[in-house]
Structure formats: C-alpha cells, structure tokens
Image 1 (cartoon, one colour):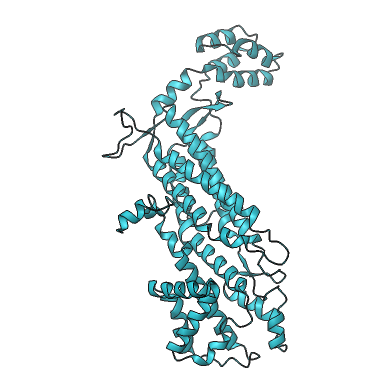
Image 2 (image 1 turned 90 degrees about the vertical axis):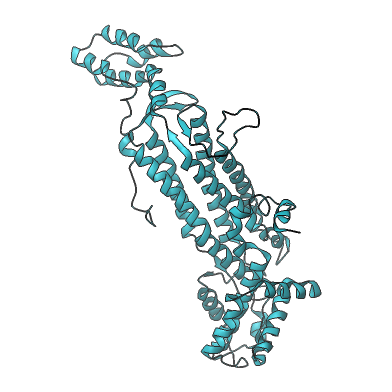
Length: 464
C-alpha cells in the first residue's frame, strides 16, 4: 500500500487527512515512541543501579559503557521498534518485550554481566508511568508550547495594531457600550497566556516502588539499601517529581491536572474561534483569500471562515478527550486495574486534535483583516449606546432620575443622534454640560479601551 493510500485508508483523520499537520507528535505518542521511552527508563534505571555502592550485585559501568547503553534509546530505530513488537507478539506483554529486547542488546554490546539487573524488582507500571510522564512533558515542551507561543504572538500583535480601532460591543447579542477591536483581542491574549502558563509550569510526577507500592521485592533482595531515598533520587534524575505513596500505579493526578490545564487552553481558543467567526459574519473582519481555494461547490463568491470552524471542531474533540481523561485516569480499583492503559494510549489523539486546532486558529488569525469602515457604520447606526454616558454624567450633575429618563427615551426604540441631541437640549442643566453631552459620539465612547489593549502584565515569558 502506498503512503498516500495508507492515509486514505486510515481509521483516524489524524493519521490520514491531517497526518502532515500532526506528524511531529508521532515522535512522542506512537507505539514506537512508547517503546523508546520505556527503553530510556530501563537504561537509566540500570545505570543508576550500577552507580549505587549498596547495590553490590550490579557491577559498575564505566563512562563508555554508559554511553553505549544510552545510544539504545538515543539512536532507537524502526528496526528496534519492530524487534520489540516481535517480542510483544510472542509474550503478549509490551513491557516484558522491552526487557527481553534489552537483554539481547546487552549481549550484542558485550554487557552480559548486567542482564539480570535489567528490570530488577520493577513492576511494569514503574516503567510505564515514568515513560508516559517523560513523553508527555517533552511533547508539551517541544511541540505544544511553541504552537501556543505562535498564537500568543499573533494575538499580541493584532491587539497592538488595532488598539484604538473603535467597535460596537454586543452584550446579550444587543448593541452595547463601544470598545476597541484591539482591547477585545487583548482579552483573549491575556486569558490564553494565563492558561498557557499553567500548562508550562505544571510539574509531572513519577513513581518507582514495586508491585503494590511497598518496595517489597527491592527490600527482600537488598534490605540494606534505602530504597525510598533511591526511588526519590532516580525519579528526580529524570526531572520528574517523585510520588512515594501509591498503589501499584502512579495515581496520574499530575497528568490529570495537565489534561485540565490543556482543556482550559482549548476552551479559551474555542471562545476566540466562535467570536472571530461572528466578526467575519458581521463583516467586521475580511479574510484574505488563498489562491486556488474554493469556498463553495456552487457559490463562487464564498470565502468561508473554514480555519476557525476547523479549529473549533478539533478543539472541541480535544476538550472532550481531556475532560474524560482527567476524570478517568486518577481512578483505579483497589491496588490496580488496567483500564487506564488503553486510555493512556489515546493521549496522542487528544494532543493531536489540540495541535491541529492551534494550527488552524493561527492560520485563521493570519488571514483576517479589520474593516474600519464597517465598524464605523455600525457605530453610527447605534447612537443609543450613548445613553449610558449621558445618564452617568447627569448623575454627576445631580439631575433627578436620569436613568429612568434615558430608559424612557431609548429602550426598545430606534433612535437617531439628532433625537438624542434634542433630548439633551431640553434638559435643565448648564450649557457647558449640554455641550459636553452633544460632543459624545459612539466612536469616541470607548473609555480606556485603547490603553487596555496594550496592557501586559509582568508574568509573561518567552518574549510574549
């Protein structure tokens, strides 16, 4: 089957239609990648065992031998993955398959003396939880965060460029106090940045403590070793936070927290996509057409907001997966059940739909052009939004019941600027106040929006 036909025959669109968009994640979430990360944990565990003076049955490894061992995961090949998969088919246990393959590699490297130290006293979950924490952390840091950084940069630039561009606001779908387009964009920038910082700063955890979390096999074989200190040091050597008290499985609480944090990122972007879709629908934004692209099979004029729509759909899928995972993964019957295993294998799917959503949202943001003429026309058509300003100024002047007076004039009625000025002229207030009220315009009634559009707090990182 050709590569193109493989994509056309794929069950998941992430491995078919959208493969090129998410291919970078295969280095972290594919079955071959999971094999590689398991090999990494086993190798690093063997090296640390060999360094521990109290683990006397494991000979010391010199620097060259350690380097040769690390090449097993640093230069992990397709042939290596296929060889482990062959072991898996034979023994029907993917972690044991890694162990048997690794023992073969030690023989090939002339390191047979260390074979019995491979997977010493470990349960499969000791290897799996560390492998998953490593691959998730590195996928986040090398793929997801850079993609989100691109979105943040685009939003920041758009907020700055349109900081003073007046726009009619809508609350409950109705005309409301004007704002600026840049200020509304900056709302999303700040929300997204806060959510991204939570994702970035979250520390993933790991455990190494045996079949039911008691170090029983470790202590039975080598009671003189402080296995609690050893476990803590080994997990930290992988730049993970150690969890000492567990059942057989690491409780997945930090992974659930990451799922929740990514879900919040995606919900913010869902909100953005829906708002920008509406701005395009209302004519506030135009879209730069892509050469050769078709908007409709029958209507040649169409330039549809397909990037925001695609992003919305994919982000929604990711939200649903992350929400399920954050509820499911921390739950395991008694000391262990295997229901988390199949769920963990779908982490890449949730990350894939997220990445696809980020890419499409960024593409959509890169195509939009603000239309100041449409924004001005909409503002001029809604002079009633000045009622708030007028009644507030009249309150300052001590005018009796100004809210009620403006409500009677404006609520549920079409109103012209001339009618509003006539209302002002009839008021019993100083002429200077009348002049100030007549000078109000919808386009000028944006408060501090232009300043707010440029606000950046000092928690930002990475040049955002």
